Image 1: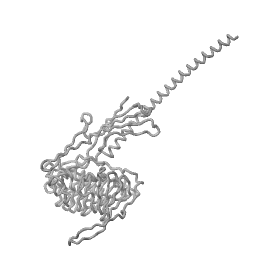
Image 2: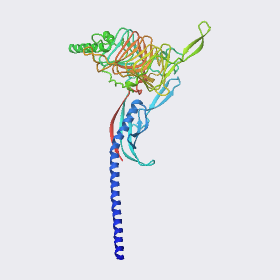
Image 3: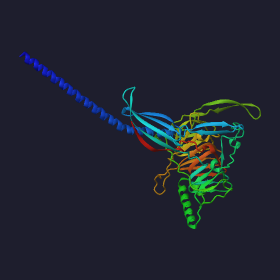
Image 4: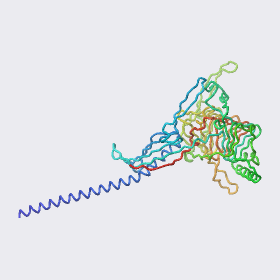
Length: 501
């Protein structure tokens, strides 16, 4: 009996061991299947995460056309997955400036990467997704590589308009190289820095100050453009003339909704400008490139602050009057407005100064300058988005660098259709530079109506229509060509393909 009990115990032990082995094998297979399924799921998800990294890089390029370098991001709900992006920006060229014996400066630019790997005016974006297994070890899942192509700035003309360019009352456009002046440097004591050097315009293709329009160009009396004119070709037959007259009537009717004063001033039929009298360059057939509509960087609901009075920060100064007597006066100190914020309206009172710093500003309604706007570009260009109207009666960044003050109109004002009483889908915005005002900037809006009335714009404008009158002037900086702008420069993604690991 005892022998039987011993044999039974041995059989039980063997069966137990066998069951343990079977259980271990099944558990191992289950765990392996789980890992394989989980890995497959992570690998599939990572494709979409890699594309998210690609879009993150495109967003950075649109915000900062000079961006180059690494990016990384986590995934909501899946903290074990991360994307790592590297942007190699070929447009972020290295500048080398050489001063000759006469004091004039020449700047050359070199590509940071081989043009064989990365073509000019483009950036290579590499987005890789990794699975964090431990704090120290990572495993690559998948990735994508894309090429972003940059379209150079739209500010290649003094004035570019989709509908109409009109110069009246002795208005002019000129071209200057703002880096070249008598003596090789800007005269900080001069009241008119533009008089120091006038570009000879020996090559109008390079020097600028050109005018472009897609529909109508009208230059009257003593008004004149230093540069080329690009406009639709003049009709050569009666049928073509009839079509041109009908188009002019349609333009006047369209302008009557958003700019009735401009519509009233437009001629009934297109008038060809006269060579040497109205322009110094060539008359070319064609039309300007399309203007990319600007989008506000903040929701309209965030634009609630109306800034119309500044903090009472004043100081007393002592000066000597024209009779040699010492006098004292109380003056207000400039106010620095924080960037990267949304405002409903901003009004700068006369005799007061507002300092804008590098970054973005969104003004949904009206931006009015009766005083002065100064620019602090030590941390980058100032980029202002305006929803409806910008009116300048004072000075904006005067005699500064035009590219450091970029204004983009988002066309949020919707005119009312008189027949239906409903807002018209296509909005409009206005830029008014009034008598004796001075602004150094670039401005752009797909539905922008620009009026420059006896004022000076040092820079360039691209709009739906540009109307210059009463001795107005646009003084174009030839250095704007090729400059990267927040709104004028467009990035497009192409040539995307996946990589595997």
